[in-house]
Length: 106
Image 1 (cartoon, rainbow, N blue to C red):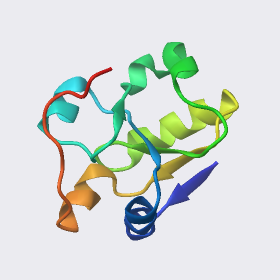
Image 2 (image 1 turned 30 degrees about the vertical axis):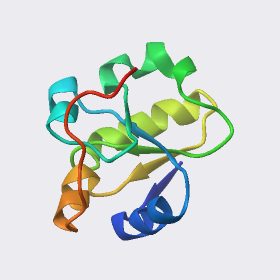
Image 3 (image 1 turned 180 degrees about the vertical axis):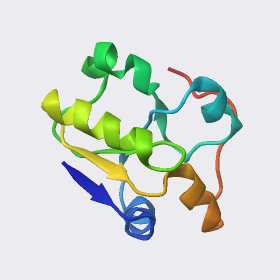
Image 4 (image 1 turned 60 degrees about the vertical axis):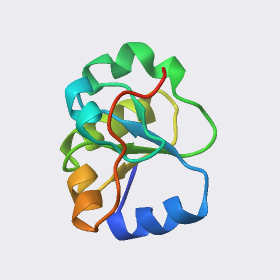
């Protein structure tokens, strides 16, 4: 189980095609999410874990970093390589990063 600091995540995100899993609630996701992030609310993650790709790391994000920690543990127990993003979407915004609004197809 691992965590990553927001600045390190931003650097990775800019240079690679990452799997980002947003574990917030749908209304939070609609208000703004990291571009490319897929929504699976934390409360649904246990029953939807098969939707999370295995093999490559999955970067888990929430609002501030608390729910992403729980999601990381759940994914780790399910055999996924998960990394919790410290500071969450709020940290992303504090760094002046853009978010996408609305729902992504899923």
